[in-house]
Amino acid sequence: MNKQGFTLVELLAVIVILSLIALITVPAITGIIKSGKETLSEAQMRNIELGARNWATDPENLSSLTDGEECVTLPELQAGGYVDMEIKNPKNGKELEASVLIERDGKNLVYTVFPTMYCS
Image (tube, rainbow, N blue to C red):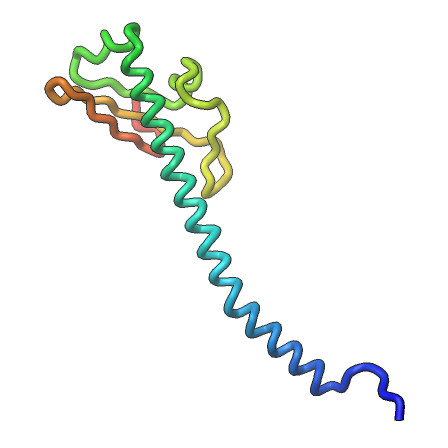
């Protein structure tokens, strides 16, 4: 007897196995993607802070910090060449509107990065 193809039971077994694999892997992959976006967002905030640190050490900008605090927007950092021009929010794909509050604490400067436009 010459058998051709698969039986219905064999096909159903394969479908059940593939469904179980999908149920296990899809949530794991979704979690990995979400974690990657969070990590990228944190890295971007650190890079913006580093750009603000470089901005603050520029002699032209250092004089404006004598009042105690200064707020710098991402477009200002980009225009000065302190931060890359293309920074997008990894969570929604839109252009990031971040700002950095620089405060003088004695001899030290404290940098607070806001993912939204904090400066008025």
